[in-house]
Length: 188
Image (cartoon, rainbow, N blue to C red; front, side, top):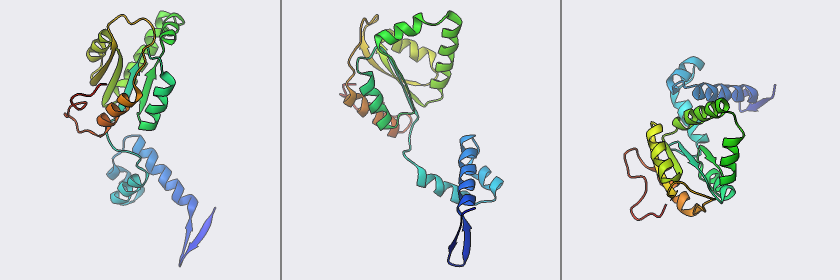
């Protein structure tokens, strides 16, 4: 046990770290700040301030799904930098291999898991054909922002402008619910 003296107090860093770990774990499991405070005999305001210290960003949970994209690696790097919560991008070759290399049951199970995971986000950006965007809007019970890569069927990879997509992502993360997805004239 690592004990340290601060003035007249002898403190344990291990105890502090354990309490912080418990707070975060309970909050991740869905407990409210007040419920965690009651359970651990703490003030709710302490939990709020602790979360504020560790906050990286506030805003909508955004998922990005898209295929067939030419510059997947560049887009993945940008999405990570922008703090996007989830992405599923494929090149044309990857999407065909994905479809060919699974039996029907495995394909459907993975697809259903993917849809469930995507639906846990506030906003879903779909990079794809006009058909795939319309299908996503019907399938997902979430706000879907489409970035059309072409008319269906798309043959081959399509380059996506990472800066335009980054601007769209920033606007989606920081906007209030009900606001327009992107500013007028945006070329996303």
